[in-house]
Length: 133
Image 1: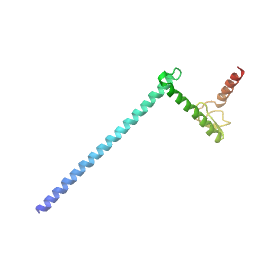
Image 2: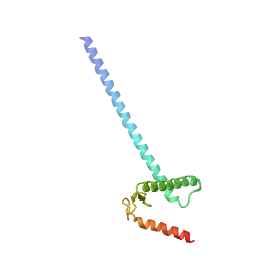
Image 3: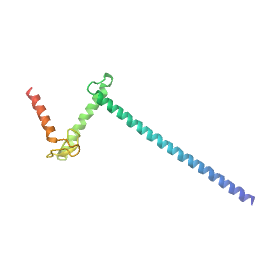
């Protein structure tokens, strides 16, 4: 019987150790998940700081950021061009305010509510004024 008692004790001991290791692995996974969550949060905060800095300084660009500001402006111009192409392929127009594709005959943007015709009329007025000068 002594053999079976020792065998039983060994099985219990190994099982308890396996449970401890499993719990340790679970704890590690939870901590790693929390680390990733906090890293994602920090990344979003950094992006928001950058967005606010850009918005607050786009009229008077700090010299050390001039290249980055120009890259953002170039990317925004390209985004507007691409949205116009998409709108044309879909048979509509792109809202100048939010970029959503709306029907060419629409008076208002279905996404942001902006009045479409007024925006295009303002652009036409600007172009007419530039041509007259």
